[in-house]
Length: 389
Image 1 (cartoon, rainbow, N blue to C red):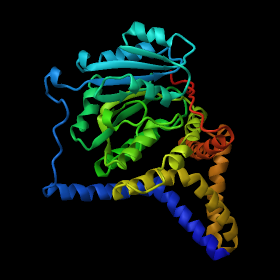
Image 2 (image 1 turned 120 degrees about the horizontal axis):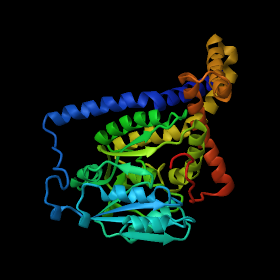
Image 3 (image 1 turned 180 degrees about the horizontal axis):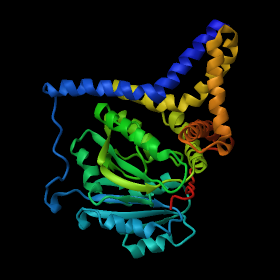
Image 4 (image 1 turned 135 degrees about the vertical axis):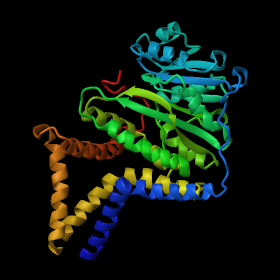
């Protein structure tokens, strides 16, 4: 019994450490090796799309903004889109309103949106599908209603599409940190560094909703429970298309102020995760290039399995308590992590306390998202996170 418990303990513990800390180092080593091969005469990158070309030769782009009760920010978002450094006659601005109960449609029209779709409530992904169906662009760009793009963001976002093998590109989002204790901004800087390496190796395994684009021929209408951020990279990989990260395409977005608010946001997001992982076939390896399969396993599947791995480590640790002082120490570390997170409101507000609380709540959001999915179904309707407008 103790031998089996030791195997479970060490395999799960190593998987957690690798998924959270080790993967970026392995990824960097692989990217460095690839750079070395390319410096010896590998293929050169194609010329960026539209760079230096006359306005008449640039492709038609439809920028689609899904919206639900966004009257506070939608006019600013349309104004931001109109300031983009892209020929106006080649840019179609579409606001896909998902059954708003406020003045979102009227304010979007007044601000200058080319097309405002007033749709019955169906969820964000359904609104995006409808927006694409009504669009004219050769390329489809997407943005949250509260995201502000840099003037050159669209041109830089489209540049990688000069390579016909590219189907999806996401940009860099910087979260504006209001007064609060949320560590999501720091986490995203870590994530963006990983995605830059993944992009260079085999393609990113996830994007973000603030700034991204899809080749029209690559777009797939997803179910209401789906997610462009998670679904497109792996779906397109199975079609032989790459998903890349363009760090020079910059956007800013307001962050949820508190860790508790971030936890609630992540919990809602995790409800549809299980339909994507199981129902949409993320788990099925058939069709993945080997390096992308490695990335997907390391960055996505291990991350989603981490809370369950923690449970196995904890249970195995209890069985191993009679096997030496080391297992008493590891149990103490686990209990300390949970205790600091649970009692964080009563402890000094320092970095260690915030990190413990953020980590535990992030893991809990995955489990509770699955619990919500089992109780209430996949849903598809959205809720805005408090403090992000």
